[in-house]
Image 1 (cartoon, one colour):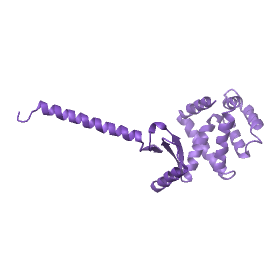
Image 2: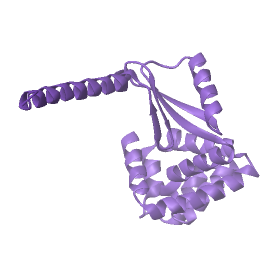
Image 3: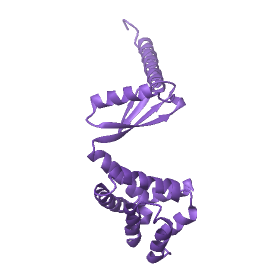
Image 4: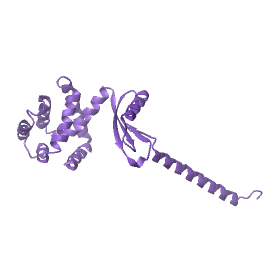
Length: 213
């Protein structure tokens, strides 16, 4: 199911118009959430629905996004499965998507809403790759350092990558700060190679043009 869901998201993300539509719905989702259950709670419930309900119930997921199932049938399905289990806010949001044939955009809408919510609250996700899992102390130190450099509250997304050997790779938006030992070794090998080539070329030039010739 994980592969199926990821394929669905990828196909939507390839459509610029779908992304724009998702952003519009994301804004409406956040505006409505702030006056009811709260943005963070709404986002948490939405992601839980995607991860714990759709991802684990293939047939239900397929029916919600099926172009052959009528809108009224999808609304009845949401009423039967979600009402009473989810919040009134989120249930109503699903119904709005169903009425406009936009249920396939739900994961993309939630992702866009999360990004918008973090930006407006002065937060930003930062990817941190290290050779070993970060300790709580290391997380605090990295967060403190990021706060001192950038004007936002960092949300660390830590990933363990044994190939780095040591050090870390930090990604903020599209900028990568690489202090990993693997990269430093690669840079060192490159410099040594350039130096060797330079020495070889210097030797060739010396033999090609002897002094006093």
